[in-house]
Image (cartoon, rainbow, N blue to C red; front, side):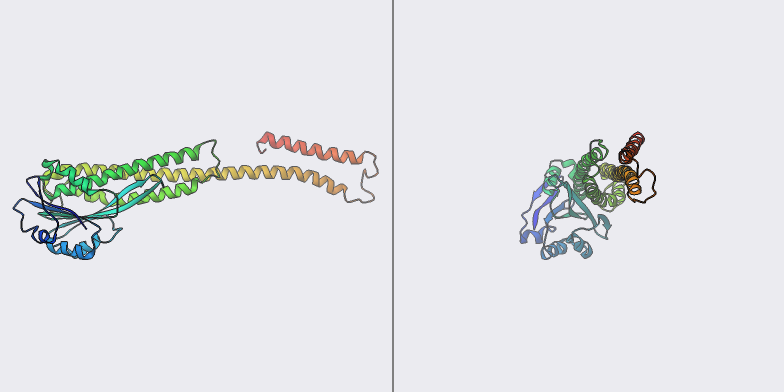
Length: 328
């Protein structure tokens, strides 16, 4: 559906109602220097075809805008620039990162934004941008900047939430009072998947944002490069945070596995020590339980108490030795 559409003239909005009559006249009614911004949310193919015909959008870009889970990218065409961005938001109740998609068609005198899924509200982006007339003076590039800036700001919020989760994992893994048999392994795996989701959204944008910052793309005036430079800096910062979080999670996983191995070794040493102690008594009892006629001490009056004392003494000696060596 069409959420909002407007014509902007000298940094000010000229309202247009999005009915069929206005859609057919939207571009025809504009003046030199004006630009149009149409925002859509999960349009159906028929509605998107009408918009594509009105603005002359490339069919390959239109197909991408209707398909979820596209890779973030910037594709120049002859008369337009197509930008795909992944939106991210953190779900506190489930400790998960959810994703959506925003596609931006940027032309000389128009911008079409297509949002798939939830996440960043482009209505608030429009409202903020309309309050800053000096930015709207840059034309369609101002809309591209505002959308990119809001989405990248959401990346930073998600990265901050993930940093908190990673800190909790580190505290759990390295806590001396925490048992290695906890569910840390599963949570580390889930967090690594969430970090990978953020990486897939951020990493492909590093080079395109740098090109925006140098005004290397068409329809991006040189004067707007400073604003995109700020977005590019934020993208780089989030990318570095994501790489650090992934490294910390790998280190925490290795440490967790090492703690489990150490605990298992300690358990095996204790089991081995008790088996050795039990084996001594079994050895003595086995020998004197064979009942041969000519075994020494079989006819001795104190042979039975002596055998019991010998087994107890050997067991105590082994127990003391194992305790001294730290096996028990």
